[in-house]
Amino acid sequence: MTDATTKIPSRSEGLKLLAEFVPRSGKAYRDLAEYDFGPQRRDNVSGLSAYLRCRLLSESEVAEAVLAQQSPADAETFLKELLWRTYWRGWLEGRPQVHLLYRRTLPDDARRFMGTNAYSAALEGRTGLTAFDAWNRELIETGYLHNMARKAYASIWIFTLRLPWTLGAAHFQQHLIDGDPASNTLGWRWVAGLHNPGKHFLAKGETIAKFSDGRFDLKGRLNESALALTGPVVPPAQLLALPQAPSELLGDRYALLVTPDDLSPELARTGADRPQRIVLCGMEALNGTYAFSQKVRDFVAGGLEDARERLARAYGCPIIDLPLGENLGALLGQRLTEEGIPHLVYMQPGVGPWQELLSTLTAKDVGLRYFPLRRAWDARFFPLAQKTYVQFQKAALPLLLKTRGRSEKFS
Ligand SMILES: Cc1cc2nc3c(=O)[nH]c(=O)nc-3n(C[C@H](O)[C@H](O)[C@H](O)COP(=O)(O)OP(=O)(O)OC[C@H]3O[C@@H](n4cnc5c(N)ncnc54)[C@H](O)[C@@H]3O)c2cc1C
Image (tube, rainbow, N blue to C red; front, side, top):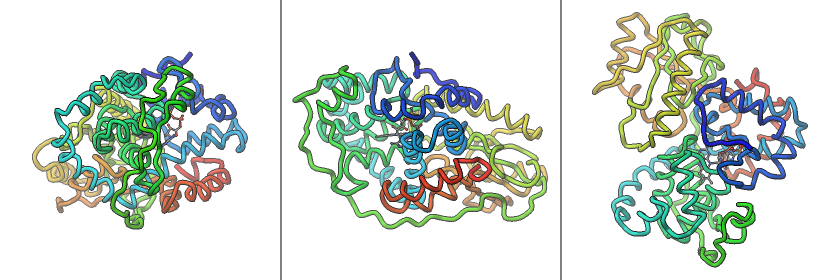
């Protein structure tokens, strides 16, 4: 039995979990991954999402490890799931306005529903719908939900409790240790029928009974005939191309800024020489409009400490924390230019809090030159996330199998 509720935020723990999972990533995953057996039994899924979310593990090394032990045919189900993450990130990267609109709508929705019985009962897990209440407890206590539970929970929230999807997405984002603006916001929109217009995910009592291994009986309690939500048409993607390595030789006169969106930049190509400084960016630097549970904060803080140790070993240069204050960009610019460091390199974070922070840091001319980079994996796959997931996957999976996920190609 695997208890997946405790996650230790370090790269070595992620690698250990990956090694344990790889033998189960083939036929066993294909046959059983859809079942939510409960928090005490998670050996049918990988449990890797928290590590992938902040790139304590990279997608390429996970794919590579799986393909080293499983045939492409046996690995296919798992790799298709892994590619969902890349699809959502790539899709949103080209359409950041979808996330912006969600963030703008949120305060109004919260004002309208704050204090209502339905919203309070959902947040506190006392709706009387056994599965929903149990999943809500699990979400808050462990920071994790199985994919089937996430889909059914979101569907019940939207179609049976008739609450705005935005508030549900914010509740998930607050508590999920793997909380990722792309997978989460777009997962909620997919359930609602906003991603593939007219196609929504309607949770049914019978399906929940089956895939929860008979743990929950909600037959006759759910709205099983609701129509999909409708929303504004989403414009085509406009993806900004970013280099995978700095466009000029920076020598060692650069600092590497590290955000919790990518905690293993030493595995990517950040520059020809070693950086002269590492700047670590913690959650305290965020502007406070995102709510995160203590569990999420602890995981991120632990991941940052792990990165601090690894990067000190990898680069042997001083590591500083992002100076906090009124104008973060100016404070950082002043500190680095005083130390004779004119260049700042960073892995471009995904749409969400860290990208917003970076855009405020880089908005003013403070004497630094910025070099945002994109990992080879993202650079290769993001442009394929134009339309539906099925179209994406038809192009992405053969490409992934052809290169067998090798990290020298996709670091
Ligand atoms: C409403 C909703 C919200 C979600 N919010 C998040 C989120 O904030 N962060 C997050 O990482 N995932 C999210 N997911 C996707 C999925 O539920 C989780 O990635 C998965 O349950 C994590 O458990 P695991 O690592 O054991 O998954 P496994 O089944 O072992 O899958 C392996 C990896 O594939 C990726 N993956 C699998 N399914 C999906 C999917 N549907 N979308 C994106 N990536 C996927 C994840 O990186 C996962 O770690 C959401 C899904 C829904 C329906």
